[in-house]
Image 1 (cartoon, rainbow, N blue to C red):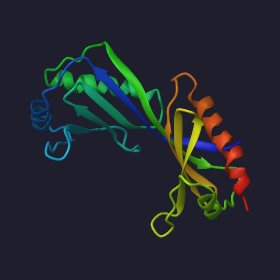
Image 2 (image 1 turned 30 degrees about the vertical axis):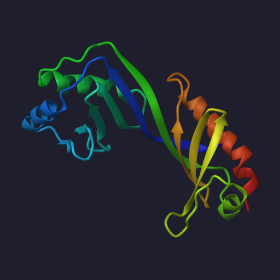
Image 3 (image 1 turned 135 degrees about the horizontal axis):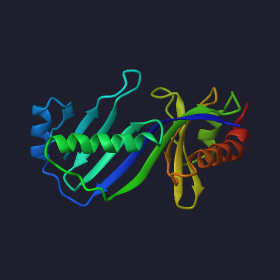
Length: 196
């Protein structure tokens, strides 16, 4: 069985309101909340949320259209704590976010190890047309994997059997089962055939 762990989860919240980005950026800065805002390079505010010192900080991106992206999560349950923290921050600056909003799981990134340790990534590169491999720049091969006709994830595979997989999307109720299906299917259909 392939061993893996979640390294990043990205959610999008869509509130049915528009934000005054310039005003929010100004007030957050005055309240000493860590932000990054450069409207000439990107039309959103990046906010770093303080959290437990043993973890990487969670980050959010606030767009004028009422969309907020949350990333840096390791567990699905964390999203509700982050939403409450976002509401708390916005309340402090005089913006009451509505309780009704859309929430979408955009992306899950995992890393792990296949059951096989000696993978011939050069052969994979030669056998597939839609892969990327430049060992002088990055020691892994990047290969898209169509789990279904309209659903693609991307695996970065290292010779030693280590991998990173991005693009996973699923229902919140069956994440572990879904990830197991993807990685075990990929191992069975691709990796197993390219083991030295």
